[in-house]
Length: 529
Ligand code: BG6
Image 1: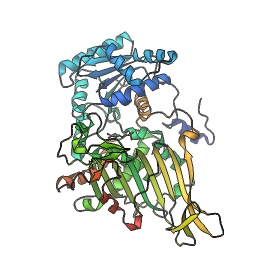
Image 2: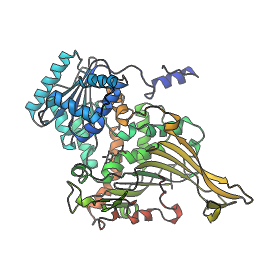
Image 3: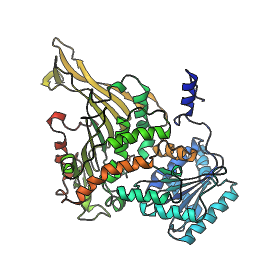
Image 4: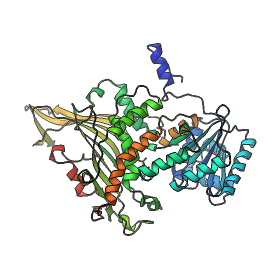
């Protein structure tokens, strides 16, 4: 349905230009070359996102997807593997559509570090484009180990797969995380990529930005007039951001994770992006450049944590064995593909501060970890208490009430699962006394919008195909995030690690994480089921 704009014509024009207004028309015909096509991410997320886009008629009539991997696999076998993973239903209409989708998918074996392999890949792409009458529009998706990012881009440039005639065709490269290992390596990778690509051809993906509920943070803050005036040091006491996961090192995840750790894997990207979205000033418009500018300002204002400050503001943990839902879990060091004496952190808790007019003095507490009791991503903005206590606060179980400390109001954004927003506040408890009791307003995403919530990767792949970089990380954002994280990594490198393991699987992390929030801040939020 076309979007109707009301109000001032200039406002209407601005809304129509906004990247968040669906264009309706599918992208131009294209070839998507997916490196790492037999890997975990492609199998779990990327093919299913492309399949959904096809079912939702977001893809053009003509397109080709060429999966690239190291082992020779006939197209038919590769398609059968994808079909299995899609778990396509046998309902005849749906399976006919899935078969049509799969008829666009091909496989090409290539060793990306080998010139001959890249030449054969180029020949295959050209042949498919001729067969399907496709223009030279190409999206290259790099879902491989990071060490291959540069060789791949060098390779595709070397065999002429990158279109150089902007008026006739386009070439874009989506790069998965981790983008670099620290600030220096990220800068070097960026510099090297830009020998072959213009900055606007590089799409650094952070799948958190594709999540509906993350985008809703922007909508909530800047689409309503009532809460935004409260988002500042006058009213906010603290912000807590939690990315808790129950998973450990399933499959051979440990092979990657043991060289990364929680700070690089989740804090540098997903969590700092969430922090930027909750803390940023209103962007001038919703265009890519303006949103990135607003986020960058937050990153630039993050107070550095370095040297001796690291121990006071950052706590790292690693899980040992423990019980989860009655099942005995092994400790991190016994996981497959993990070094048995590994000092990699699987949990991080930190206190960040933003030195800006809006946020000076307000702590932002971040925590993330594997093998925690619940899978939850949540941002909680905790407001200040009233300046004086006129009322008593009680907490009651049935009729039995006990006096308790006054409870602050909290605005909590639940990113996943149970997507929604809740506001807790104090209400009078019925009875002869004037006692306060904490209660909740709750908005549940799925109750209010009982429609298909697109997966993050659906949204982001479609945006890349359309050439819309709004929800991708600009290089200066990515660098600023590394600038914050790198001194912490350096301090850890230069000091002995804590006695790992220091938390049991199935618990909320090391006890030391609690000391980041002294009495004044009341502890980490209890995450409700
Ligand atoms: C990935 C990390 O980027 O995000 C994983 O590499 C993590 O370690 C995952 O599990 C979490 O994503 P989500 O969407 O499940 O919250």
